[in-house]
Length: 91
Image 1 (cartoon, rainbow, N blue to C red):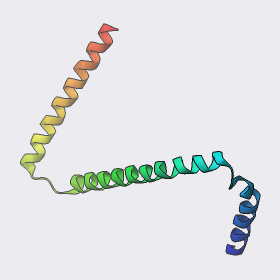
Image 2: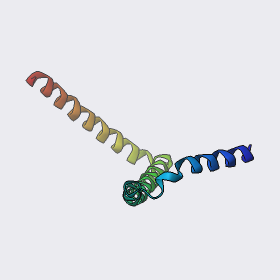
Image 3: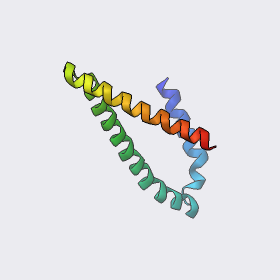
Image 4: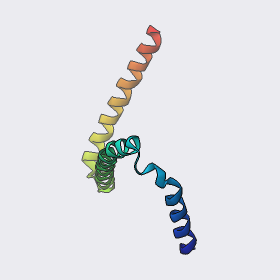
């Protein structure tokens, strides 16, 4: 399997070798590398944030703090519901 994969990559390289010296391809390559690095950094940050969020969610919460959070969540939902009703009435 690996031999076929290597032969396929080599064949693809031969077929696209003509594009190596093209100015347009070189310019796109120069633009794509920094964009790929930026995309990788953003993905890394998203991964770190989601990992931290998962850790926060899985931590045990004291009963009192849990009750306060539940009340706060209800308040947020109530406000959002009121805002959506107002928006619907205005439309």
